[in-house]
Length: 160
Ligand SMILES: [Zn+2]
Image 1: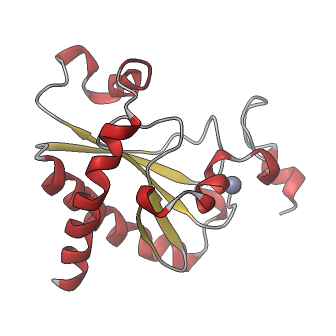
Image 2: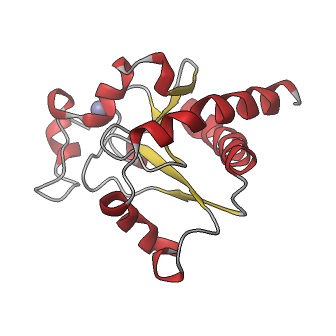
């Protein structure tokens, strides 16, 4: 499948070019914002979406949507999501931890992992949690959680 054909699978406003890709740019964030990286996957605080308890799990290459993930990427995604949601739950104390894949703003495959704490009101739970981006951006607060999630994530790996 050519890049052009691939890009046509997305709505006109969706960013599909690597040159404009916010998800690719996460590759160059400071270490303080990184939870983990391996050859295929990475997890960081999402630049511009720094709500405390929110993280992006992203495939490291500019792959568009589920359709462009390789078998190796697909095979490792589930374990990463299990470990990461567990680490976020442990670090934040949230009883609910959401995993959401939209891919409409940026087609580069990524999953928003979001802790839903007791402080989140009923009208902001479930899919409505995305509205917290406009209400609770707090980079400093989000950064304080990174070392905690990183430690919990490493402990999950060590415990396997
Ligand atoms: Zn990208």
